[in-house]
Image (tube, rainbow, N blue to C red; front, side, top):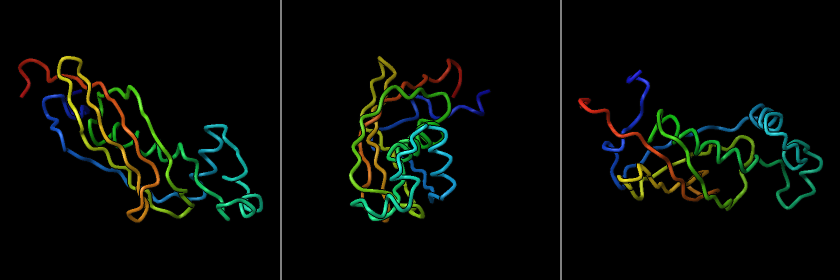
Length: 146
């Protein structure tokens, strides 16, 4: 099972970073609406969305949060870490066709509690669309494992 494990607490350093990028498709938005139950017409109805301040359909804000989860769960800290909390602020809309890059950067490591605090940022073409702070619980390296 060790090959499935991500970073251990001892592997992480303040300033360490990882990211995950995804171009959002029509299918992503429809599937996310179905999975989440959030069928707000600003996400799924083009005629409705055209009348809003956004002038077009926008991607669910929590889709960006899900991309942060992808970074934390698959890149850093990765498999074995537990996502404890997330504070997030949405700064700008994301549209179908945009490529969102979610980045996590280690801000603090609490060895005693096995907690890692990470700055989380989602960008589109360099513009911040969401940002916040996440906490993960991370395993210590097993005794005898290098």
